[in-house]
Image (cartoon, rainbow, N blue to C red; front, side, top):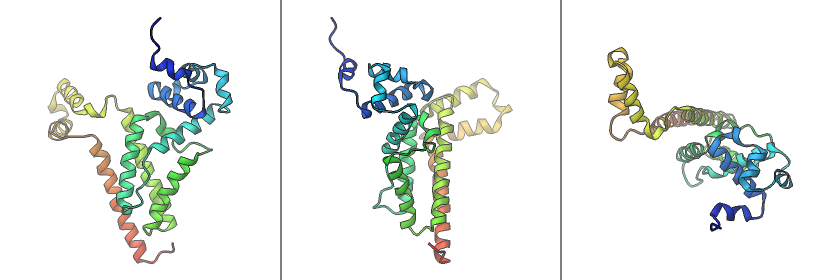
Length: 230
């Protein structure tokens, strides 16, 4: 008889809500959210499907739970930083987390029963804006703008037909298949930007993020100077 594996040992651990949700994330990370079913989760955990219902009411409760865990993995805006650096830190952390869980992006703001990590995250975002002098209205606009950019970029990144870490190699291979003179600006972008030493697709995210933060800082300064009601 072969020696027990780590997976075998995991399956002997008593089932709990935490273990169930972590198993659901593992299934989704491997196969996408469409791969997550009650049966596939039971197989992942080495239990009977009906045993899952001792810990969650249904699949919607599982989705509520896994999204709350994803939110818990994103760094909160550091309270000891100025608002701009705090939001930049949070956004970069969120992009990193969503790269690990690309299936989660469309679900992040979809849950009707948000968990404590989700609520804590949103409260910290709004608190960072408000303590920096943003009016309630501007804080709401700013929060929505940053998340729209973050989730939009994450969706685009997840849909790329290649790993962002290999974008230079892929771009070079694509360029080699077509005459550069027919697509001069694409050829220029590839040779003068993408294929340059140190190119990182993540810099595209940081560039847009900094533009947004710069714009919000100007708005904050203007509204503060105008004495807008807070």
